[in-house]
Image 1 (cartoon, rainbow, N blue to C red):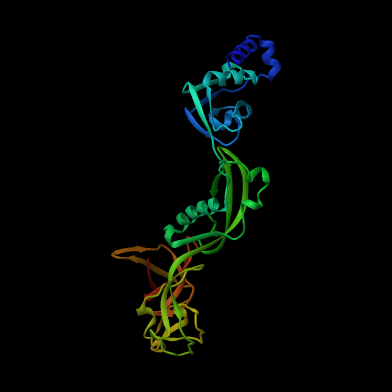
Image 2: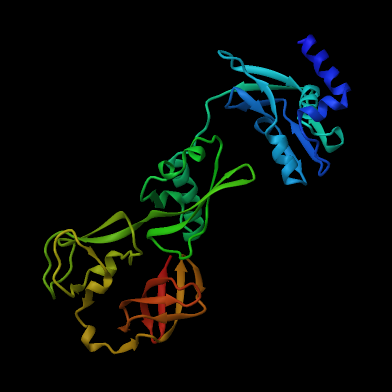
Length: 335
């Protein structure tokens, strides 16, 4: 090792030797921070594998990241390198000493570990965080799955890179079911891949399910409809027992069907006047406990009477929800 240092300093003392090892760049300046301990995934270690490089010149930064600084011998899992030796290696690579500043501990300890390769689960976990935010729903009430393998579709050179970071963009529309959005892969601050990717997005909701076949005009009771909690791919009414019972079926239904409140009607519906017409501008109030929040602009998508459940559109977000008519031009929803 002493002989190696003597040879290196001898080379550095001769500027003609430096130019022979690499072309000196005269642009940019780099701050190189070397940690005292770092995990690496390759036996041949480059400066970019261990150091944080802040540089105002992209070409110089790329040159610095690619400089070989150490080799971990076969059968070994640890190696160390001094910051002074790193400075020597940079000068041998053709980088002038006035173009960089190396800081950190005197010695960096390196540990060879298994590479952390990207998996489909990593992509789904990143997508879960995005859809949680987009839908305002906690993770325990969401299921987000890729509709097709993601990692296997990548070029070999990308899927074999260690330490990739996944970024899933916000979807253009806040909805359930099959949703397409952009997935970006980063290596540090380098964007290495962008793909349009499709996910299945399900939300846990309370649904009404038929237990037996129902005929049109058949009264609803606990004997023929049951409330269950399921992960479903569309927004449902989430009815309560009060919403279901004392109503009759509006159509024939088979066992196991999900029941919308639009599939039911009250027996006295014909005697009650219509107070909301389709395309009317309506006032919508969202209720959670004692909290009441009024939506600014909403449009009815169906006509109905007091007590009916109809769909409406939030004009600001274009999302479609269901709510109960409580009066002329007035709808309530529970959140």
